[in-house]
Amino acid sequence: MSLIELTVTHVRAIAKAELQIPAGLTLIWGDNGSGKTSLLEAMFLLGRGRSFRTRNSERLITRGQDHLRVIGRIQSHDRVLALGFEVTRAGVAARIAGRSADSLAELSQAFAVQVIEPGVHKLVEEAGYRRRRWMDWAVFHVEPQFVDTWVRYTRALKQRNAALRTQPDHARAWDVELARLGERIAESRRAFMEQLQPYWRESVVALSGLEVQLHYLRGWSAEVTLHESLAASRVRDEARHLTHSGPHRADVSVRIDGRPAREILSRGQQKLVAVAMTVAQLRLLKDLTGTAPTLLLDDPAAELDGERLRRFIEQVLLLRSQLVVTSLTSESRLFGVPDATYNVAQGRVQHV
Ligand SMILES: Nc1ncnc2c1ncn2[C@@H]1O[C@H](COP(=O)(O)OP(=O)(O)O)[C@@H](O)[C@H]1O
Ligand SMILES: [Mg+2]
Image (cartoon, rainbow, N blue to C red; front, top):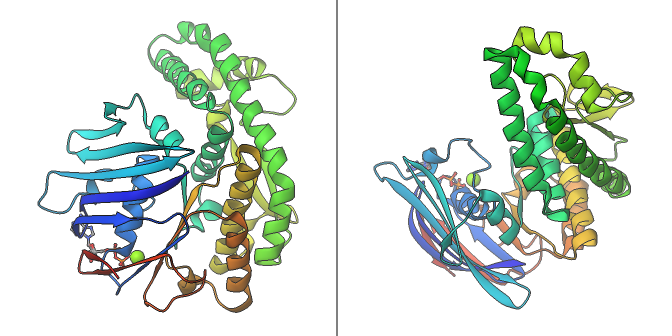
């Protein structure tokens, strides 16, 4: 699976750009503030339906415009698929092969894309939300029906929480459905995290030289079923109008000698650990599904140096992914000689 063509309209400083993207390595270079990261955001939008820099996609629309649009052509096996993604004040819309997509998950399925960017350390530093999303994106590519289970779970959870607010007696009516779907989600995640372990151990040592443990926490106590846990926390749930157990509370704890990595590691070390999480995940995905997601690397030389950078490059090249790399200089050869080079200057994109 790879991106072969990209058309961007009104994304931040980029008024309009058209790029042909080779299956190998693309280099995008330009000064600070020229629009390099904006181009990566556009690619990420196409496969994820959101940016990696902001939760609010409206902020990506060029000031003074009322919409943005990204169109991409994806080569998948022997066919080419057209994807479109649009953001307006009214919301977001995705198109696949000329028709409206049913959900953003359809985009994600059509174009698998991952990013390593300067904010990557947040995966280690921040609350569980980012790590759940990191885990779920990969689980979904291994098990496409995972999304459907997740959507149904979320719907049942909302109904239960609404009932906790208005008619607490009715809340338990959702428990059987919630427990059945929740156990399935937890099992898919557990299986994935278990398979990840050998890949993880190898990449975290190679990249950071640290012994860091990843522990999957499913979102409720290990000794009981989810149905039992829901029953046990009912009084607290009713008092706070919230469901306290279930896979929506899952996390992946990142620890060193039993202590949270975020309390011990420097920002630079957190970055290496987060990169290792992503590299390990991509290597496992490739072994399980045979496809390597497109990998976007935003200015990797800025954050890593010397031996760490060399090891990072080595790990990335092992993936044999389509690569799109940004740099401040045109001479960047970190990942070899680019198959295509683009220069960005004040929002204008030119093939070199
Ligand atoms: N919504 C927007 N409308 C117009 N310009 C924007 C918007 N958001 C950001 N910018 C501008 O886009 C420029 C390019 O940013 P960016 O892609 O981060 O550049 P680079 O990665 O090359 O440093 C910045 O100068 C920023 O001020
Ligand atoms: Mg940038």
